[in-house]
Image 1 (cartoon, helix red, strand yellow):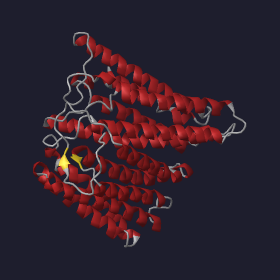
Image 2: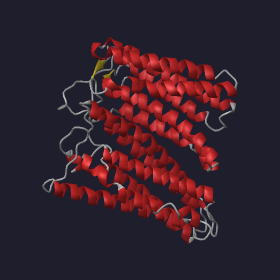
Image 3: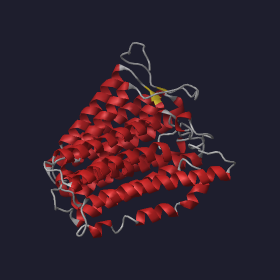
Image 4: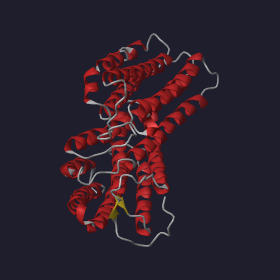
Length: 412
């Protein structure tokens, strides 16, 4: 952590390429992450009131934009050293824009609030464009920063224009802007291993975001507990199972899938695995948030009341996506041999399919218990598979971490 006085303005430069130099997330980055998770929580309030397919689609779109704004800033900060007053003020604008996005996320997509949501997101992209334009002075990344500034700049114009047109036109502009936003990094993907993200700093940011988001799920469990007065057995079992499930997801992500392990990007193959790993986190984060809201609903049910089939299908669907994504993240961290033995995981996920069909005949706590058991089985199978691979390779465990030949000490 730097202790030198912060300058008003200084040239943006690449972080040192010396991999022996440890780099940690800064206090500003931690604060930035906290604000964005708070925005995710605020956007999730309407989902708690409308836990339906319609509410899920609406929430997923808004969640995608919040996560993509966070991801864009994180990818910039992991490559470039730009800690001056100007950078901090630009970050403050992004934080305010995230708050504005959350404040305009309570109404439907066709309402006036959605226009404010899109306009706030446009501000996020404009700030990111300014940051990349500042970084164009760095010769080694000029083409990369030019592509990013151009693509995100065009998208920002479309997002801003969508705020002042009727909803029928707004959705078309949103679609075009989102397509440009998402495709811009893909166009420049061949530069990823030439100017790679920091192998320690970026996974740490993802891991910290995961921890904070899991904390929001714990808060959801607590809210469900607070809503109970008589404390039926079903609510108590759901609360304990929900908290144990959050613990299990933490365990699986950090100690089984090695989601926050070092990510070295040195080749085109590493680049492919990096993109799979990084973009899989969107589904991971989305499913964690949706599952947390669903568990809160189950805990808050009064005695004798059961979850609706639609509620059950959404909860089980979120759990299935969550565990499938953890398997994918683990695949990007392990040897290719492990890819051939995913069928036991699919057997576990198949165990969840009939759960919503039983909601009419069983207490709703059974839903959460089944997800917990599936998570525990998934962890066990991943550990078992890892042990088999270790035995097949001379009795030692192997973990690549996208080019890293050994498991980091923290994950041993």
